[in-house]
Length: 167
Image 1 (cartoon, rainbow, N blue to C red):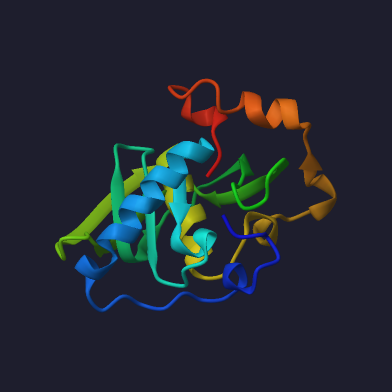
Image 2 (cartoon, rainbow, N blue to C red; image 1 turned 180 degrees about the horizontal axis):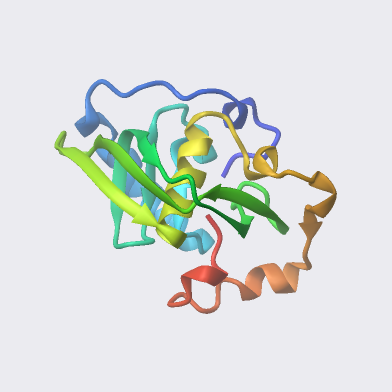
């Protein structure tokens, strides 16, 4: 994981011309994500400025060059955390439903309609590809809070409870 002040986290990642060329990186992202207790991880979070992220929020999936094709007007506020910003939490309002399009590692088109937690994870990870961290989406940064190391670690003890893991 790169430090939160690393410039790679604050820049727009480059498009990938050959999805198969990032297969090893995707595999590494899955390993790192699991080791860190997350449910999503984007390439910039490990220092690679390419448009790739992985998630296990709805089964393991890798997205190459993802983009939001549509979003609902209905919005939800939900507490988010991030592996790049350990121990920080804050409420972020996002569309409740999104349609994401991209490409698989095998070069096949992907389109996924997502709502609730999956929609949130996809939007959070896609933000990383655009150089946006979750506090950038908060309406009131005074509500950004720091939790103890013990509470942070406790969020990773229930791997079956995705609401208690970080993106």
